[in-house]
Length: 219
Image (cartoon, rainbow, N blue to C red; front, side, top):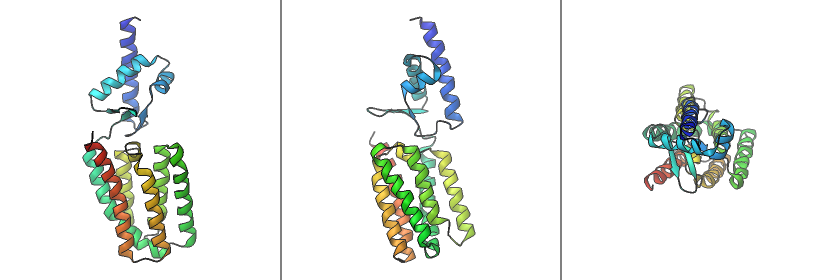
């Protein structure tokens, strides 16, 4: 194979990947599958692999054995700060919202969580994350405090700008997350003390954050 041709294609693959990462078409946590990328670029996997290795050296991509290459988190510290803050704000919003949630809203959240559970057997981290946000939104959007509600929405927006899906990095966290959703719903249905709901919601958020940190520190 002509070495110059491989290098030229590698440069093209590199530029193509950088553009999609920078525009967040391939967000943090997005899995870079060699075969799929090669087909999209109409080239062999060799130059695509070279481009991914270059991105890995630059810190834009991480590689894990038996998992493959994924787009890296832009700033792990920013992710932690966003999760810590959102845990506090969302916990308070859910506690205030709980008395205003009717059976219809709780049933809707239960259906969404059921769809998340269905995904566990054929895991799609992006789809799981979309449903996860929908579940949380149902439970906090009835918050009667508009200032707090605005802060929670800003927190979600900030978090979405930092990562595409935490569950792409810690897929093992997904099942526990769904179980914890069941627990939060049970508290809301039972009319539990607001402090209990607030604590459960905050700890749920922080457990996901800690799962990511544990995974990162173990590498």
